[in-house]
Image (cartoon, rainbow, N blue to C red; front, side, top):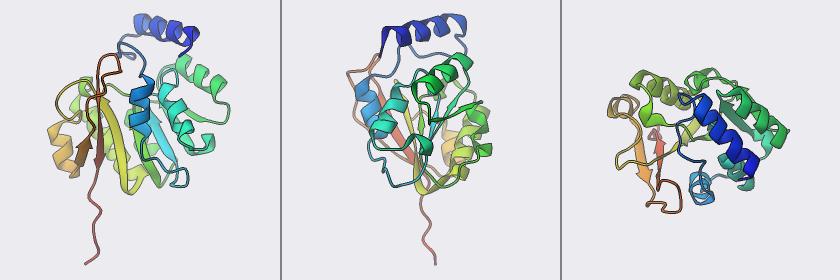
Length: 190
């Protein structure tokens, strides 16, 4: 991360603490775990809470073409930085709760840098329901968390029938984190 990214991040954290709640941008180790398993030929990827672009850079580094990456960001200054840094990236200045209305179908994954646990259950429900509408069967919703429990409310997990796997602890992140991969079971025709 460049000094200007850190300065922008810290400035926005102070100005808009309700929008920027992370203590620090995601480390390269966390970013690598977030994008593990992406397939350059597997279809579009939707990113939530793109921030200054650390996870975006990892998505593109995994071979996803910028035209196939759709980054949703609520902060207009972060959107401007993303557009300047990644000119062919699809940057959507909108709430992640509106992901269900994003004009993208058959995405292979949603990669989230959002502070999901700090969000009301209704917003989590809107985000995860949107995920189920935009991702191909078997696709995943990838979310990191600093805590010991799944970062999606139990009520939302149960309603959507979500299954999950979690990574080991990523110690080289501030603070240490885990990555969860949520998916809906792929139904087998009878």
